[in-house]
Amino acid sequence: MIDAERLKILTESAKYDVSCSSSGSGRKNTKGGIGNADAAGICHSFTPDGRCISLLKILLSNRCCYNCLYCPNRAEADVPRASATPDEICQLVMAFYKRNYIEGLFLSSAVEGSPDSTMERLLDTVIRLRKIYRFNGYIHLKGIPLADRSLISRAGLYADRMSFNVELPSERSLRLLAPQKSKEGVLMPMKQLAAEKKAVGEEKGKHRHVFLPAGQTTQLIVGASPESDGQILKLSQAMYRRFSLKRVYFSSYIPVVRHSLLPDKCAGLLREHRLYQADWLMRFYGFSAEEIAGKGENLPEEYDPKCAWALRHMQYFPVEVNAAPLEALLRVPGIGNLGAYKIVRARKYAKLDFDDLAKMRIVLKRAKHFITCGGKFFGSENVNTVKTMLALEDKGPRYEQLSLFSTPETSLSALTGQL
Image (cartoon, rainbow, N blue to C red; front, side, top):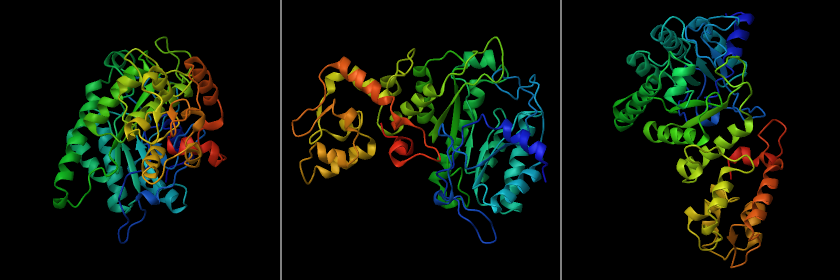
């Protein structure tokens, strides 16, 4: 069994990777096995900034031969080093699972030796968990770029989800801050997994195994390099379309490692939060990255990106909630995707008024400036007044991230992503 000191080092070293959440897998328990990765069997906890901590998040090793300047585990960093064997990780997972500490595993590793040897050890770990320990719980495996294609393919048969982290949004920043990595080296295995998952899906009747049932994700570090939010969102959009990603995670840069090529201060959780809001708009509201922010633009801090878009396009408003198509309702600040569908269903049977919208939990403080209800308008026609009111409303408790002590009123936005 792994000792306490190595466990502390390997879990502390893994905390900066946010590219993990346990959802989307349909892997069920089998006779004689243990664990269940069905969506209903995965428990979630959230830190104050919204990160999921339901999995055991650990590195196989933090002895890295790469020297990425932003990474606390880089080769030149003066930090405690440790490694674990595949069997030690397996024993730890089983012990924690049986004690109800965890519902699954997020396993990553620094590149120790070479990409192939590191990926072989990661693959050996997940195979042991599945075959020897009969663990049917959730496994998220972080792949190693530049590892052999066959190793990556085999890993997809045992993991529920995999991720290859892009980290920095441009090839230029990678060359400057992570010279041993390349954008193509990360994107190629993502492309490979997407193609193989599609092929397995088309012939699933011929396969006993389900290939990556929870898909793949990636992570981008925000603020370590000078790329704008618009460039970050455009890259995210391209990866969603090309690789059918489940999520792009954003991690605000924290200067845990000092270097002349790196900023001296944290990028801030507000910028990270705005990017997640913009990401939600792209995935669920029909917005494109170009609509949300231009190539050299950053998202405004004063209000969320949906409000920012609406204020730039006041010529489209107000819309009549009893007649507007679903696509138009989704672009109204204060009407989320659930609320828009409620409106479309309810107005088939009766003409809606503002009281009806309030009962549907539409955020009228924002929405009233952009809608009419039965021809009535209760908002302000002065754009500057609307900007001020929206900025003040955004500073209220509504955007408090979900935590252990959140109330239903303050946690609604974090739970549903409504904008």
